[in-house]
Length: 208
Ligand code: MG
Image 1 (cartoon, protein in one colour):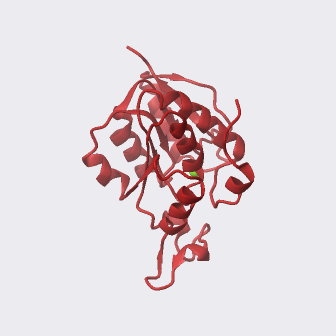
Image 2 (cartoon, protein in one colour):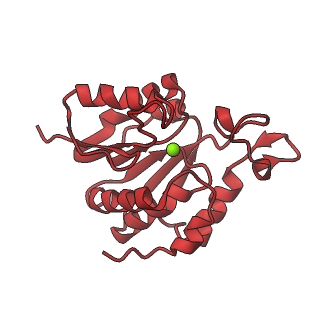
Image 3 (cartoon, rainbow, N blue to C red):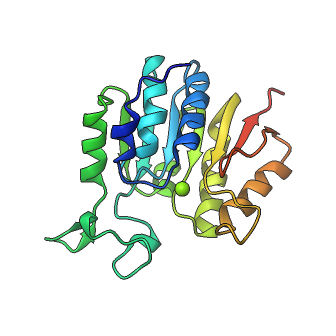
């Protein structure tokens, strides 16, 4: 499988996704987008959208990329993951949309990736479209991840994928909120559980 992605260029996009995980996302979206649109929660500067979106483009499908684009808790000024380059000097507010839009342009994804600018729970209130894949990688606070799961997972079609980022069974490796919610999804028995791929938790909705 040859991915039509410039990896060097992609590696220069800000983000927290490693290349092996990114390629795995591509393969999942390539399968899922054959029968439905895909959606990600947590766009940031567009790194995962490059891979999910490029796969969707192969099938002439659509990737919805949901983010309020004002950065998550740990990306605010004074916090651990604050990046001064993302601060809008006029408003003093973190703004990741400018770089997200640049990424979509640079990777020729303008006719594939649809940015949805808003909080996922607000967008979710009005959402009706069924999806082939959902990638949950927004705020990593427990309540947020739980909300994202409860609001969005019901839109996944049988045979579609529910994918979590930052799944760390060992607390030494990272925060536990995504893992706790992932375990809830596993316990629902609605999904076939695939082996963890690095920190990607991949669940496939059963065909009942
Ligand atoms: Mg992540």
